[in-house]
Image (cartoon, rainbow, N blue to C red; front, side, top):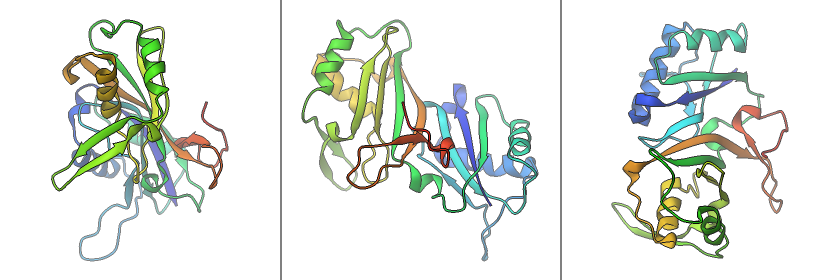
Length: 238
């Protein structure tokens, strides 16, 4: 039986990397006495899948992991048991039983929404909302991605589904988070600052992931994003 767990990660825990987060949950699942399923072979490990690994320093209220269990009393009891062994900065938000045919969390991810806010005050960009509208209205947003092995030219615009600023001067965006076209919110913000003629170091703003989505659209259809927690419910994004 497959179980999907939604959790938040914030405060000091935002500086804990993905591998340490995985180890933390492996230990937490044992402490919570959950009847988790293990792989077979010489080195058995808990069958576990995380959705989209979170960058160090980014907070989130939309993290997901799937586990397989051999038995379950109820999803609510798993939530309660895990909540009792969490540390400050990690919060269990939801636990649900997945349909048998559901893809695992990692394979399901299509998009993620983010909020960016200055840690002290508002963004030092006049007419922020208008500048975001003009930036988002471009047909193409070229971006150079450098890795250890190569330099890749990308068009960020194809992976930005929504972008706006609210009354509190926070920037929001919905971007591609699939394995084939993952767009980092920091890369989008970097290009936006370049467009707006602003120099804002990363240490001055906070990035928060709000939600992680899968896409129910069939080939040729418009996107139909729903949160990973709603797989099977049919409720659409927005």
